[in-house]
Length: 175
View 1 (spheres, rainbow, N blue to C red):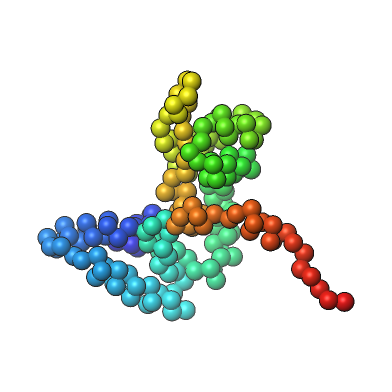
View 2 (cartoon, rainbow, N blue to C red):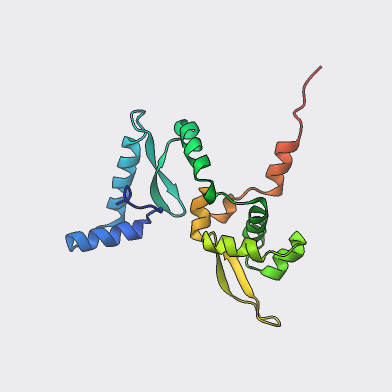
């Protein structure tokens, strides 16, 4: 099931399928053990792929050692890439959510209609409701597809300002 799913498959989804297939209740612990066994099996160097936990589910992905060849393929599929403006808009939504389009535009200083529309089309953000302010503007937040796209399980895994500050600090060397 994990192999044929194009998105991370949650334990509950696997359990539902197995319960229906065997017309019995398959314990979640048994499913977790089976997934762990598969993960161990595919750690072997003979496999170019592995099972990865992402966005609260499990998915087969190519191993990092094959990144260069996959990179070439991804360049050819550049339609999936995000423009700088879309990435800026997405970053603001990710860090400030829930947020309205007007709040994003105040931070960016430009109109964000196009970027927000593209992010909605790519299902990286979703409408979370309407604000209780004048005009009842839409409120946006990131989606589970966002987690999958960036390979994270929780928004807490997003880099912090401190992470960027540490990267920019020059290392001290002794003379």
